[in-house]
Image (tube, rainbow, N blue to C red; front, side, top):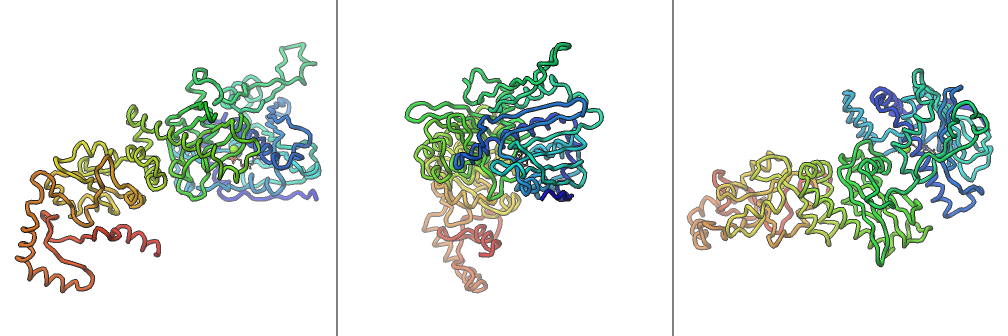
Length: 564
Ligand code: ADP
Ligand code: MG
């Protein structure tokens, strides 16, 4: 039935609409980028679903996007013949925010306009950005495969409610009509719109069509003619020399749904046994769902320029989940499915090659643009630390990219590379020392470091949640093993002027303080395994140490906190 209903937006949508209209006004032209991007996504989805069900094309395979103006009605319309939406989908997609990270996003807002505008940009402005320039938006849509009687009209003024109604709609796909606000008439100019499309949407691989501009008086009969206004070439398929910096950046904003410029990128064409092209980007900031287990992966898979799927998790390991971009293979079949990807040798090679490229890009950045690298590290360092546990083959390369706080810099900033540490090691020093604690202050002030400090031996100060996991998988770096200062022996004897006492001396000390040691042992009873004289301390009287073979105190606390 065609019954019309009026529904309220989810509270978050109302909040987002309000914020967006106020803080993104100076950037208002992005609405067109968002609508074209959605239209393009909708065509990609149709193509993907049609791999399994060709009937979805309904005899019309020429996917395209149209932008139309009606100066009389003061409207701009963006249409596509993509997948379309059912009534339920329109309700779910245009009335709520289903995105992961939504809660964190709203929690992070502060009311400071400039800052919030930034955050909204990162979160993704999407469809709702229409309301920056429109005081009423009408969406007409029909899902591919459903009959014309299943058309849907969605309409809202962007304040608190929207209406939903079933209508007849012959055309598959979606058209979004913006009724422009007072004062937005500049958008009724075809050249102005072409300018915006050129700036933001040139790389969209589908044709974007617009009515030809009639050149003055004799225009009448030409009015219905359309022309393509974008280049519609896959950016990654062009030779590098033909692509400008700005083009790379704009393309990034499209693939990554990001508002900001990327930090760096790597564009490669691989030829030989396998043929593929990859264009991979490092974002400048973490997305809101970085820590979400189900967060989408950011690499899109294409086969011979044809979009296959978003979010192909087989293309990047989890510890590189912040990477965005595209991989275009010439070797996979067009009807490749997720199941096929899981056991594909081609994918395994592409993934291995792409991981190398990303690690290489990071190494380059660290070497040549240390400031950018430190931005990267602040944003994604903790994710990269998952790497040694996940990617055995690249452990060394990942280890070179790690940055730590240490007693040398004496600052919580993570800036010390393992190579820096090695360069400062004492004559005869055999281990890379570290301490894991809950906070920088706790690590830095730990009595376990007294002896090291006295000898001028540096220790890494680790305080991230992931550090325990990291150190469980990093065994050594360039021949030097890692050693926790809170476990087992320190092994400082080999350092010049090291442990003054040999085994003999230790025994003698132990004897000399026998009575005290026994008394302390008695007081602690079962809760300690052994009480002994230690060479670890300089000024503190005592400290607790774990056996080299035991779980660290920090890990135990974490497990206990997790209820294990
Ligand atoms: P995003 O594109 O990041 O998912 P948007 O706010 O831009 O977020 O769009 C929300 C959702 O609305 C999309 O995920 C999609 O499901 C649906 N949608 C928007 N535009 C279209 C369209 N032209 N055709 C089909 N579905 C659309
Ligand atoms: Mg979108």
